[in-house]
Image 1 (tube, helix red, strand yellow):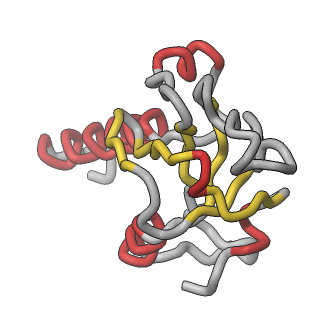
Image 2 (spheres, helix red, strand yellow):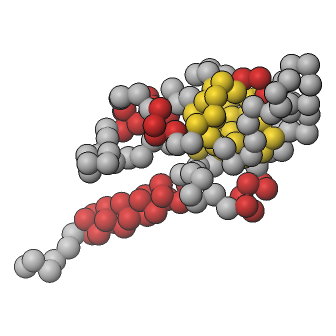
Image 3 (cartoon, one colour):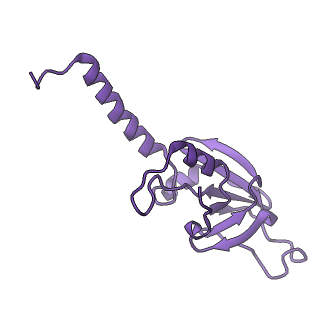
Length: 148
């Protein structure tokens, strides 16, 4: 009797497994992003910078699963990102950037909450910022996260 599965039960389990696979595959992060995938992203023009916003982990360090609503709120309000590409004219104005570039590729940066243009792509969001919208660099964005 325990070996009997209802047709709907089987279908539900298959959909659940497929849904989990799709969610894991589609989430953009610097750990899973390859050079060939970065090459497919837009090349910023002029003084612009292409940034991948930081994605909050779904579990806390203590193993607590963070509610989806809190994760969604954090994703909208994220103010840190990983520099994927820098435009050819970024930080070229020697009068404005007397000390040199404020950031470079493969660095974590902090920017204003509503800075840049948000582009929805498969797996998440990227932002295109102007070179002067970078407020600071940081070694690890988790060090500057505020409590949710």
